[in-house]
Image (cartoon, rainbow, N blue to C red):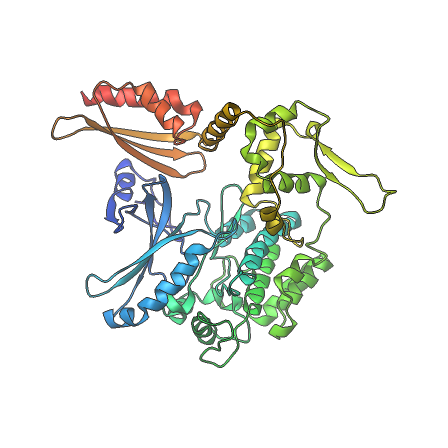
Length: 512
């Protein structure tokens, strides 16, 4: 079996037996939804996590990460159980395109060493650090356009946390190991419950390379003890008597932005000194980029800018194209769901999709028409808007306005029959699976009571996500009908229906 990420030396390619071992289910959640596999992962969503395993969400049919935090004594676990519940309930409520989704948690008190287990979103393309290491091997610097794009996504996530509707949330562990990248370039920061779930200092001493991400006003212990103390009140102070605020995240973000810009320290295991940081900033050619990072890394936390200030910094602020503004207008108005109507309107080339008007009557309005967008490009672009690849940073939040305004009426009033058919069509459209299958395994097993067979499909999709499906089938069921049923429920692409049907038919013949 190949070494995990971070291992050294040349390894043989994994065999079918080793892959089968990795997919073995070794534990199931109390609710039965989450299945822990044998394969251990290098992705960890926070400090203090002892182990992370690949797991399967049996309801959605997608891969997730099964994280475990172990405690040496049952007593220490019992004393903090209520605090854990409060923290993790908050984490499950976080919902942002650039924050890794936190699905579920539970406590296992069986045995001498109790565990805290939580399920998180699985990032298929690895961490930011892994990307920077690969990039450094090929080029000397990171393209500033890509740097801006990723900085905006990270800042968008921090803006959501720091401006949370109930209380500001300090992330407290932002670094290149806790920021993840999806296959489409979407950045996601891992959700963290710092010292509250484990002894953070123990973990950080093990990863000395990340010490330079911590703001200078804190050491590892005082920052994360203070974060624990602040779970109940944003005005609390930590054990070191220091007020905790969002400035600590700004400093950490500044180091992340610096590492992305310079590709330095991606592979080093030595400590990064203040002199090394200053030299790295001085090496940047763009004066606005230097100023942006320098502001984040001020020693005095009071001198550091807020996230909102960084979003309107000259290096970040841009005049957004009418195309991007139009895309957000369409998505915010829920027009994406009305796919059939949008496609019809694309035929009306002169119809205005979005328009910018000016208070000055002498200035002519600027229009973006449907003729400016090709159908396939428009669908892909709107999907990228929805996933967060083009956040409107530094602009007024329009979500509250969206909640209060009536929906746009795009066409003639519909009869009751038309409305019913349209709703059914939209629901079917939302269920469509667009990703294609690149690898497939099918297993047929006869039930012991002879009442039929079980069909199990393990699919690898083109974004490297696995989907595991199983159901009971009768002897007289048609393979093509089974495949079309999977298409109908949005589990496979319509383009893969015949391929799946053929695979099922071959497996049925082999099982006879």
